[in-house]
Image (tube, rainbow, N blue to C red; front, side, top):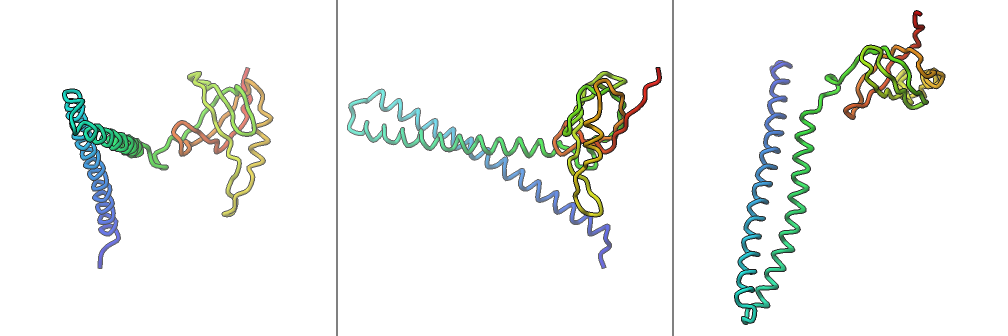
Length: 189
């Protein structure tokens, strides 16, 4: 009987091989497109030279038609190449994105710059850095999603320069932060 740990390792290895195969195939597609583009450009140039040297030749119209055909094909292949490069870039960036477990989490003490029911803009007490913390509009209660009315009401009442403490975590989009917990702090004077 296969142990769970060895099964887990096997699954990870298979996933790694599949992702590697996909990236290698995409790179080969890109190389094939580049070769095809180079060939078409060469054919277009040859036909242009033939037409320029013999504009009144019997086959000049045929050469012009072939040249137009190659130019159209070249344009279509270049649109495909751009899409493929964009996909590869997205894939590379996706590999650099942290997983949900690696995303930034933290606590901060800051002064309120502005507050709405959707977000709170703050200036950190320590560094002066400005951050925008989004207010979750829904929360989970016993496996159901319900409006987050308590936090929304509390955030709406925040005044400019009010000192707050907040616990937050990073959202799916890099650089977006969501409030998990927020409290007003009375500042000692």
